[in-house]
Image (cartoon, rainbow, N blue to C red; front, top):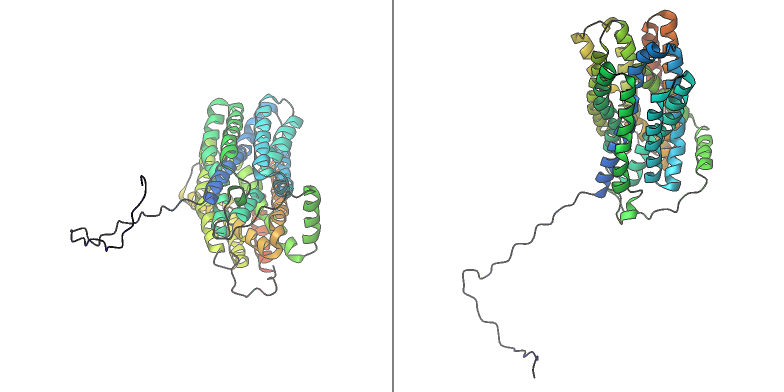
Length: 446
């Protein structure tokens, strides 16, 4: 029959050729990069784009004072509004990401930053500075604050959470490293308006990456979190604002929340509010060129990246409370020496301060987030958002009061000394945070 197959029971002929017994090599399995790392990379770039505006305030205090005659206190008030809204927006942003998704919230936030930066080019009054810099940019950057990092990390990673937290936290320093020298050069050569336009374009340039590559949850692409098991995506949570406020009231009934919030407020006061806002004008008071002072801040960004990533690695292995106590103590000591280091030229002792301080800049974030995760579980991202709000309130107070102190005393020395003393208090507060019952003394939260 045509097409039939004849079967035979005869044994197969023996193969005595040289290839007898040869097995074809198995194709080597190619390990693909887990999608979580791509999402983390997009989050890193997003934070850089959103953080670009944070490079500007310290550079523009003197130019705005000269162009418009506004006092440093008025300019500092606009910066403080930005920082306060940055912090107060963060916990609501975490809940909004649960409701509407990470991608939508981040795109709107980047657009708000770009709008505020562009609008400031045409401002003529101090109240406009507070609207554009304070309101729009504060809301936009707040939606991409560290709670964004916490949400990405909690959803996409089980293993390496501390490390990824450190990397994403370092993204802000990377933005400072990229934009500070660039913006300082633009301000020095072309004025402050082109620098503001540059920041707006940087925020807009990140939007396509978020639209194309960011995903809200591993389940959206049929994956398990990195190092974990598959988890179905929960239905969008309604009442985002109500949940955020409820989490605040629930956590505020516990002692660890106030210790975390208080110590992190001092963290913000001694970094964003103090160094980022007032270091450049303080150095300029000692006749240091603005480009040199901005370059020193950029160097802080380099060592901040190293210190924060290393802190994330340490947080995966050691007690977060002790790490925080060490970080705050070292920061306070370094700030006490800063007034005697200010000179017209960059000398080796100042370089040592920059390196030492840079390693500690936001090394506090991974252990603080780990303690939030340990204490508050599934609500940890929102709780961390409220703790971050305290960070920014502390930064806002010092951004404003630092300017007032400079107007009143004619120097920033009293501000440096006060910040050093506050850091000692933060170290003690970190050691007072209690452990969760049932957690072994040597346990490490991963």
